Image 1 (cartoon, rainbow, N blue to C red):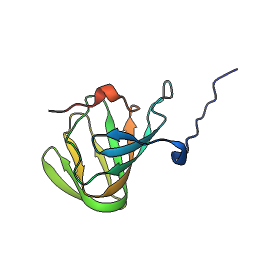
Image 2: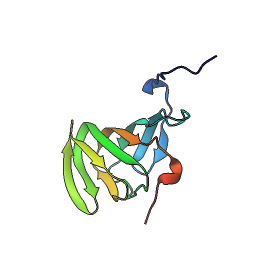
Image 3: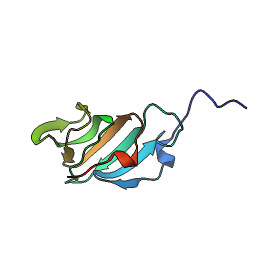
Length: 115
């Protein structure tokens, strides 16, 4: 049987896992050959600064207000703010936020780096 040309994920069925930002539910991260993954992330008040060498992440703030620290600069964010974070940018989120994160290529735990 051929592999389907689509995949469906229901966040209500995805167990959250610990991440540097808080808790993430990751869709499509384990789909072989997926060009991206999609995460719903509950940001804790004070997440850990990290960066990626290969992934570009796009954050879409769904709920809350706070800021992103991007290479040491504080950028205010609120619901429906969208930020693209390129490889090498040291980043963290501060504040009670719920975000949609779209990593390209798909999330790889071996591409999380800390200073």
